Length: 179
Picture 1 (spheres, one colour):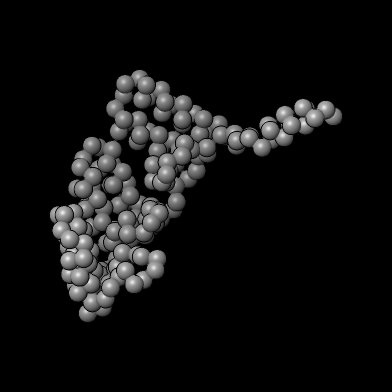
Picture 2 (tube, rainbow, N blue to C red):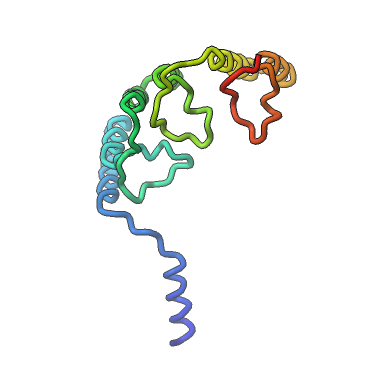
């Protein structure tokens, strides 16, 4: 075998990408045609999600899908909440409104975990301590968003929670207070 042939063969193997299955090729093609055709993005996206069997925009960073799959199976409560959230966002409603309703439906904020994973269960009951942490987290977010001094916001946050959440590594948004 000639050296050039070996290099060309190895290059082809090394840089080969997985071939998308027929289902995803159809979904991607339909999505591209829908958007280029001047249709509403929300309508195209809803059809795309249905075709793929999951929402590819839930995965960050976004990567163009290479396969179709069934959505993660969740309990009926989580399915209802996820579907409502998808419809709310694709319907052009304000993200903040959709998110507030979504959190209320689930009984917790799925955005506290990074990376975000679409919920498969609801929390049936909320403990009083959970409400305390939600209030403290909300107050901290508002304090920082208001352009206040971080040290001042952190001091108030620590006092509200009853502990310093930044002592826990890696940092995870608190779900309970220690008062």
